[in-house]
Image (tube, rainbow over all chains, first blue to last red; front, side, top):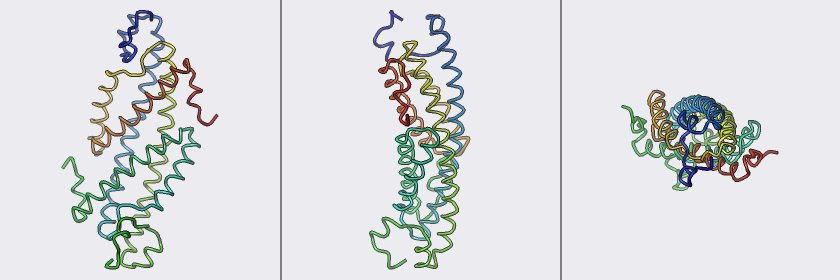
Length: 130
Length: 130
């Protein structure tokens, strides 16, 4: 693609127009489209699992607030770090990604636990679709 | 828990010692433990799916590098934002969480695409366990 400008290189839209304009890339476009369908399916599954995860951590937040427990539990976090690291290696996932994932969900869960505690144990404070 | 100090409140370790010291919280401890087992199972599933997702995006990175495509594709990102927002609402997940998830995986995938492109299309550059 000798006619590719710098800005094109920064952002390439991969679609049938791209394939038509550069027939030599048509096969790559087709393969990328197929992989993207798998990526989309994986994202659907992960979003559904994240929904269940945050429902579970919201229940934990209510229990913690009613029992007077803190949002934070460092022993639990150490356990999670070690466990997710191990699972990531087994699954062939970069352990940095696993740790970023853990930090993301744990941080957001703790923020929500704090909001529940501040609302006197009412999980309705998180019910964004109510 | 009138004997709870400020620092205790900041960090509560939820375990059988906690339950023994404060019998009135034993039921909450038991319920939290049960929920945590579900949370751990969900995390195992998500880590496995993330492993598959990054394998797929790594393949996309190789195809993009060999075809001379950019790591970034804004039209694809707009599509993903709209799609994940919709799936999150259906699943009962805070759409902010869905967007944070998307930003996390897309940012990391793009970083890896750039590393593959810089390595002349060699995905081995990402093979952290080799």
